[in-house]
Image 1 (cartoon, rainbow, N blue to C red):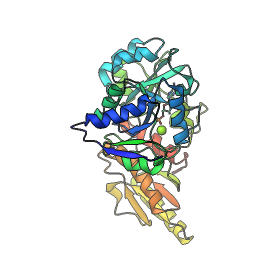
Image 2: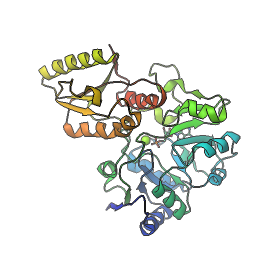
Image 3: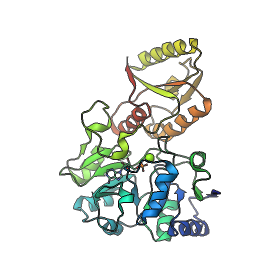
Image 4: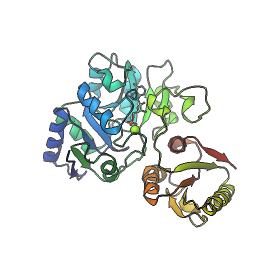
Length: 349
Ligand code: AMP
Ligand code: MG
């Protein structure tokens, strides 16, 4: 299959391009499109065959459900058995935006879209191309991240092409995404709403709008007895090809430890990558150093994380050592992705 990429001007959406992409969705095909979090791989959410194509293109396990993207809050009632009162309050506060809500599904939603679950994940993305595509297609669009399953999520259209070229008909290229890590997922079917995946919208921000919210203990601690409730959170994920080890501790001790490890591995003939920050860029002696950005700007770290992990694949390093981050605010989402990319290999110093 030939993959056609259309450049999108996010400030002046070309409706002709959107119409072509929308017709692919309506016909049960796949379209990769930008959102503010990461690129999504979309299909008609109510068409089981179309949803099935997403799993095939990504190589995604069939028990890993998709997020249904809508462009009007009223559309939640088209997929939900009942719209909880918290949903409206959260939508007023955060939609369109990087928040996904889990609610009980109704009979319209095929199990192919929900990975066999009786609940459905719903989000209204804050991106003009995504909203235009949903609106023009008249469909609700099921979309997970537009990467091959297990690889880092795409933050550039080039990442989508690297993974899915020849497997999907259309990529909409809206440039680099704004946030760079996936949406916060909050489960509203629990007595006390439960965060299943941390993201840009933090527990504190949700609490301010709907009162008490908890966070799934399975998502930061690999040793937790609890299995993460979002099926997708149990897989090694977001991962570069090389082994990745997170070194955690006070900054100077981390730099020292990483340099010592790098020297040891290089002596064994291994090519070593170091994943650090602007503050420490001059301190390392690995073969390849990449910075995620400045520690003073968590948003930049989040936006660059996946791109940098992919770049290490091109560097053909054998092993990567990474600094770690405080788990407050957005740092929690960054650490969640980093730990998953590392398969929870952490060295404390
Ligand atoms: P992705 O968009 O690629 O990040 O994948 C969607 C994420 O949402 C995965 O981690 C899924 O496990 C999660 N998800 C989607 N639907 C549900 C649901 N009904 N219940 C729990 N988690 C869900
Ligand atoms: Mg994904």
